[in-house]
Image (cartoon, rainbow, N blue to C red; front, side, top):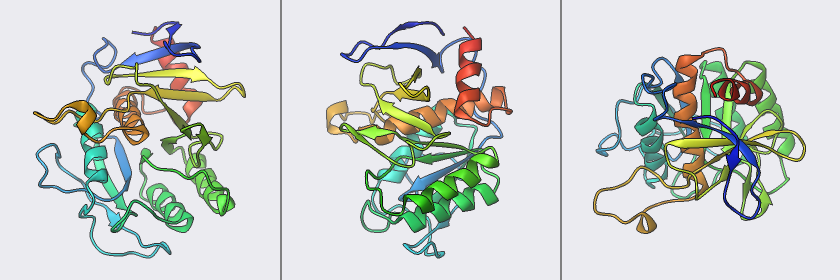
Length: 253
């Protein structure tokens, strides 16, 4: 389950891994773990969606806006990937995408604050920005969430460019690893010493739809990590930082 192996791409580095099918997580389902999914909302009628605990819609200025009903499908697919791995977790959609997959730093900062104030354990942000404008606003919201022990999962890099908030210190920064099985995540160290989380970019399979025709990419790598973290948090609720998660996984080997 855990050990030093090779990633299998040109930038291969040693890693430790955690699998939902391994002996340490088989009996865990994310029960009692509160997960905020910051995305386009959720469609509760989708057959892959289980119970949703609650949620909130936020406009571009961070104001409360509308319902959490998904108009785009992205948030529903992300939620399905998380619930596949952690069906016992409490899912709280935070809708920041309305009509298109675009939002503002103000809305993201407010989403992080809402998650912290609502005592979430994990925030899944299957999104990010390579732009440096307004990073101070996002960094301050990240710092508040991390100070309260909230794990923030978000892409660290996409197509060779650094992304935020996944690149902030303390974030559970996710990298895309097409060679990683969907039930597994791999933890590596960056040159700066930060723990990074590699995962498959494939979502929950849709019967009759080939994987290459389905949604896929870094968004679902983040969702797959979030689902595994929820199971791990049920096993050990004291994990409140990426470093603590990495140390815990290494200790399971």
